Image (cartoon, rainbow, N blue to C red; front, side, top):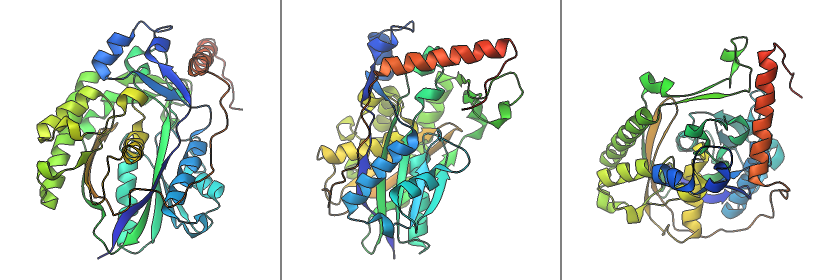
Length: 370
């Protein structure tokens, strides 16, 4: 039987940090209010487009795996904040990498995009369609954020990480997964103005207004992640005490605590990044995984549970068996360009642009894209 082993990993985190105190300069909030409700202390704001983050993370992951981009056969780009809709973002990463043999797929299931992408690439390797793949989880949400909406502005951040999968005869990689969607709750998290459905309907394209029902999302997220986690462990014949590490979607500390404790796994086995990076949507799980590896929390042969949920409301849980190697085979020189603005300055600039757009809309004007 062919398996899809994870052989490389890499991240690309924007350097600009937006703290809770920064948010309190333009929102009616403070550090205690945010930490109590979410567990978040800070998050990152990107000075470069998502595709640039993705290329750097992919290069680092490929170097880690010792795989030449020329030999790469598939790029899976998981995100809900693509730089462009047409052409797809994965083709841009393929071009930047020089991976001329690789197929290129964009996948959007919101915050679960990386894990759904992991399932997609693993299945293609197991069936022999490809021999290897790079799977990317990336979000640059800051340009689309409604920075005047406290319910969402305090939650989200930008970031990226990627993993390399390669065909293997050794049982490793995704051993099993449970995927699902509670579609009747899809309106509980909706970004209006971010898609063709809003053209000529009173909302200027790109001027987002977020619908966010926190209580409904909390209930559905906990239920979906619990259900998926129990199902995949049963499917694979694994007991909670056999799980070595949980790498969950980092949407909210209270959601993580509710899911993990009800699963019967101690919080000491959970990798947390929510306090440093907030909710990076599709990037949260792969970034947390790369940090767990850097901190020595992933041991050879480790059994890792990865539960997540996202808008839709999609949910999933993946059970991953780690291979023998937990250190990179190589390093990449790829790096992000220097950032000459603070995170707060970039956010204030985005707020001003949104305000101007809304003012133009109110008087019947519109500005074409550059």
